[in-house]
Image 1 (cartoon, rainbow over the protein chains, first blue to last red):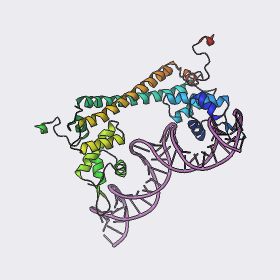
Image 2: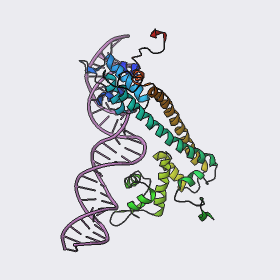
Image 3: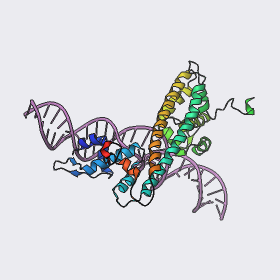
Image 4: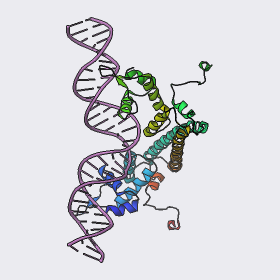
Amino acid sequence: MNIGDVSRLSGLPAKTIRYYEDIGLVRPLRSENGYRAFRETDLHKLAFLGRARALGFTIEDCRALLALYEDEGRESASVKRIAQEHLTQIDDKIAQLQSMRATLAHLVHACAGDDRPDCPILSDLDVLGAKSCCGPDDA
Amino acid sequence: MNIGDVSRLSGLPAKTIRYYEDIGLVRPLRSENGYRAFRETDLHKLAFLGRARALGFTIEDCRALLALYEDEGRESASVKRIAQEHLTQIDDKIAQLQSMRATLAHLVHACAGDDRPDCPILSDLDVLGAKSCCGPDDA
DNA sequence: TATGGGGCTTCCAGTTACTGGAGGGTCAAG
DNA sequence: CTTGACCCTCCAGTAACTGGAAGCCCCATA
């Protein structure tokens, strides 16, 4: 199979597949004309990578997962550990985004969004400006 | 003020402040010895940037927000539009992460995590392998 | 006066995971 | 023989910093 074929079958752009070869995730053979010659196993690996990336695993996670995938003697605990850590990171990221979201939604709601310059969003961003905040200085 | 002072006061690393100068977000003066000389307004801008970045705005958003911040004749609608778009992107990102999270949590839960090689996580990633999935082929 | 320790400077490289483009070979069809 | 679809390599750019090297500047202390 040429790169276009595996690209179609795996759903990964050809550029990405070349990149994955560059960083040693796949090692396709070469035809006499210099074209990459992919085997079934290469295709499987690429599809595996596409799926893992879609689940947000980093390339280094993918490398480790791929090694486990190919290791018949693996312990599922190793796989689970990687996935579990990734899950924790996703949770952290979600929490962070939700916190941003809450603040931002509040500010957007409070902003008139008209032709006047007064804007609670800018006031919030102007952290050191702190006019009329919430202390006794306000009086 | 030297860079160390504004770094402490704004909470931004000195490296980041230099970077912000590089890309034209702040334009501190220079002392005779070549040191950056920050004014109060520079400090305010940097604190503004720190807060905006903490809310996840991109640097380009920050540039636009900073321009509005300094424009006395701005319309709050312009600010609101930027914030609203950012909010939408955050929502998209949260949704995507939650979708990943759901799949991953399911897989992690299903994995024994012991010393045996069988692993539903790897099975899921092996999209083209598709042995014993959920169709009639399974029989 | 020498020296030591911060703090400051610039510049270069690396990070993550690709993506775009230039410039050029290969192959099958008409 | 040419056209168009493939394929190749190499270089550069993305976002937003971060780390490190090499080298001034300034103050205080011995």
